[in-house]
Length: 329
Image (cartoon, rainbow, N blue to C red; front, side, top):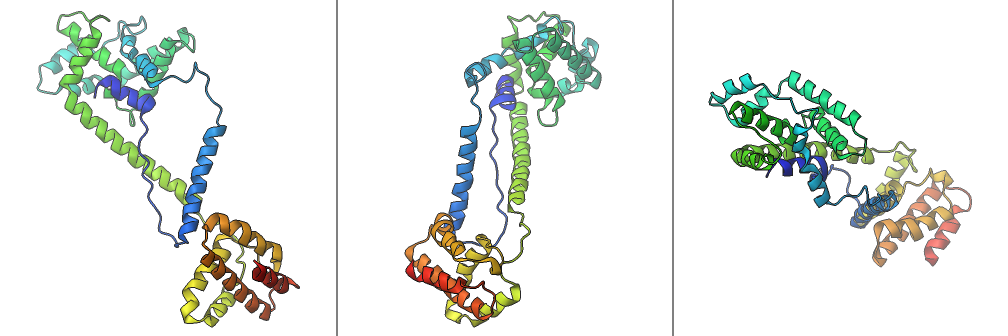
């Protein structure tokens, strides 16, 4: 991977894989889980469709972006940076050591040098119009410098070009724009393993960060909302104790869907329209039930309503209306 390609990845096209870490939570019906996933995907698609589309001038192809970024190293030869170097004497001394070329470059990137470079790039942004290529590339380079923890200096073509220009001067050679591509390519080849290792390290770090962020977002989505239980716990426990053992699991699963997932209001507020909305709309859309699931749900609700009526917890007329609806449906 070349310095230019790595820079392109960092600035424009690199999209790390999101590693979603599933939280342990109470199991729901498979149909409901699938439906929730589909709804999330549908929302994402809808958001993308409603986002304002970029004009052709703004929406560059990867080839155009790469071509634009291929001019990054040439900033080292612009008037604002023409006389900037990393220190001839310091480099000459380091070249006599056994240190690697990458280590030497990093040693020369002092705070003073970075501050000087940033000031010159800022001047370049100011001198040229905001939409000019030079202003954009100066801004891109400054962005990378400011985010060195996420985008290492060694991936910055401008820094590499200044280093190679300084080294050429120390070795008694003159590096110009015409000879820059070949020298950059040689640098890539000499430091291939180092650059590849750096790429992998940065990608792993970014994936880990995004995994944490995605996990936090997922956790935020799954935070339980404060709400008043539809039925008091002691009443519900009393009812479940009356359910035959062979039907216990199925009844609990059905009522969990109605009382937990559907989240009805307190029992005193229930009416026939609520039951109709649940059976004809919510349950069908979220659980994708089979006919046997519908029959099981009707039976579970009917028995629950009978019990709640005996406990005198239902509003007047609810039991008759709900029972009639469940029998007809």
